[in-house]
Length: 430
Image (cartoon, rainbow, N blue to C red):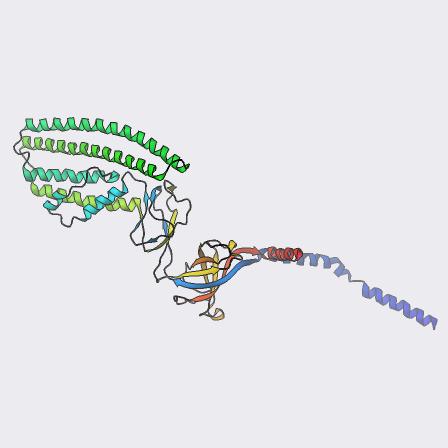
């Protein structure tokens, strides 16, 4: 009996030893397999990204995608004529680039030119713009017109027909003397203008430091403009006298050769110079003005776009958000919790209530503008749809005013490992 019991105990210990000892291959490769599995899972967790989202509700309010306004040429900004979120009209001037011409004076000239409805001789001869307009790049075109105008007047009135060569030469000397006087006067005015500009800059600096008021700055600005106009008037007198000299010399040449200009030829030259002036004004506006291509609300999206700032070609200047109902704009009133992570340009996923998600899919949009709100209140968010209402399943949705839906703003693409570690941290803090 004792022998059998001892034998059973020995066998039982042998069975337990066999059952408790793992196979040799498992001991050899099990650790490597487990380590490889952990590394593989970690690598997958690193590659897979998990979106961090802020949820809310959206409502379609208008349609017409926003229009970006970019600089066509590299230049300095002379003036910005609108403020952020101003309502603008189509064709309204928004910005002026630096030019030798005064923007207001160009508008004055354009207004007078546009009032000319007929190119007959009486209408063109009656056209006489102010001589102190600061027109910069348009000066040559204007003085070419004035020269052709004087030629037609001379031919029409016959003012030179009774003058001999000696008299014409005497008129040339008088005009030359007048030119010398005007040039000396211009030099004196330019020196005074430089002093006035220095005082103007000093007054601006005082105003910026809070030691002066805006009325003094505007007074100095007006004084600078007055001197510029006087200099322009002096320059106009010089060019007018030069035109007279050219006419006197042309008449002397005609007297010597026995020929004279025809009235029809002079009128044709005047018409051509006027048409050229119109074209030059249009070209100036295209080069130096930024004009609204559509009505809407303007947003100054680039903080670097300011007066006297240099901008490169292609720089985004502003965005026009149309106010009509022909396009697609979404409005979100976001709860304060989590709204701080929302930024312009972030991707938005929209699931419209009237188009069930399982059947139609979602629509991708983009955060266009994040508004400001008082503490504790909802934050207004504007959403645009650059590709329209095309869903992830390829369906094109029909937009309607007041369409509602649920929205997820993807604020960040986190890796799956980062998301897991953040959850562990939150659990450990609790």
